[in-house]
Amino acid sequence: MTKPPLTLYLAAPRGFCAGVDRAIKIVEMALEKWGAPVYVRHEIVHNKYVVDDLRAKGAVFVEELDECPDDRPVIFSAHGVPKSVPAEAASREMVYVDATCPLVSKVHIEAERHAVNGLQIIMIGHAGHPETVGTMGQLPDGDVLLVETPEDVAHVEVRDPGKLAFVTQTTLSVDDTADIVTALQARFPDITGPHKEDICYATTNRQEAVKAMAEKADAMLVVGAPNSSNSRRLVEVGARAGCSYSQLVQRAADIDWRALDGITTMGITAGASAPEVLINEVIDAFRDRYDVTVEQVETAQENVEFKVPRVLREPA
Ligand code: 10G
Ligand code: SF4
Image 1 (tube, protein in one colour):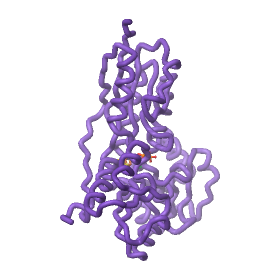
Image 2 (cartoon, helix red, strand yellow; image 1 turned 60 degrees about the horizontal axis):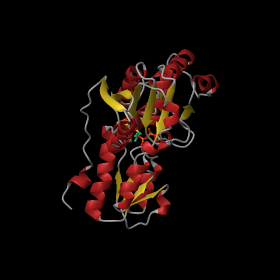
Image 3 (tube, helix red, strand yellow; image 1 turned 180 degrees about the horizontal axis):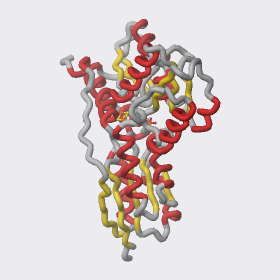
Image 4 (cartoon, protein in one colour; image 1 turned 90 degrees about the vertical axis):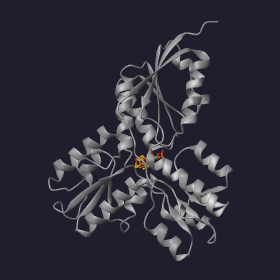
């Protein structure tokens, strides 16, 4: 039986960012250096395949530090942690490695610097997301105010409208965040902040590539996990850019083939925590059913790389 033709647009950049790559390397190097078990506080990155693979190698994933013994190393996830977490690890004399992405740490430092300068901080982020919890946790409880939408800006109660700064989560929608920043600047004209926001290069590039791809594609899939904020933003960006079918899939088995009936063009991308092996699995599933021609939609080139911490680079 002849397969129907399908042009498969592959977004570039897609998949792993430099912070994810570094965080996974940190867990692998820690297992090499200290042997199993090595504890990891929170999913190192939001991807079940990555977590299962590291678990099979001897990593133990927990949500809180009190689930770890004192005498085994613990790694903090790429999303960042509140200040209280390394403080507790230090007080228990634990060996710990912080796998927080350097671009998240930069936001932590920014928040602290604003506080030292006497500014109250408004964080733009998603309530309860570990990165937001970590960034807000750089300052004492209750000091940082959270806004999630332009509507929230109207209700936020500040100490002094003349002494404010804002920081953001790194994985937000660039367009949604611009609207929130505009609302903040309209209500608080003196507010200080980064040049635009703190959204990282990887988030920005993946959203740009999706916009270019979504224009051409009948349907679009984002490979990523339901708890992956940046992956979910890619689904929304695709839908808003005009792709009427934009869905998240963790693996090829999640693809709803019936919904794709009749398509002749398809877009595929992946969140910053989704490994290339899963993207290839999805592409192969299309090759099984269609006569596929792959076309890369490249809107940027990335060559960012982050070093692993010194404690893991030194010989054991
Ligand atoms: O997109 P989120 O923040 O949910 O995380 P992820 O693990 O899916 O992707 C990598 C991004 C981070 C580590 C947050 S800076
Ligand atoms: Fe770092 Fe951006 Fe990747 Fe987050 S999404 S880990 S900030 S590079």
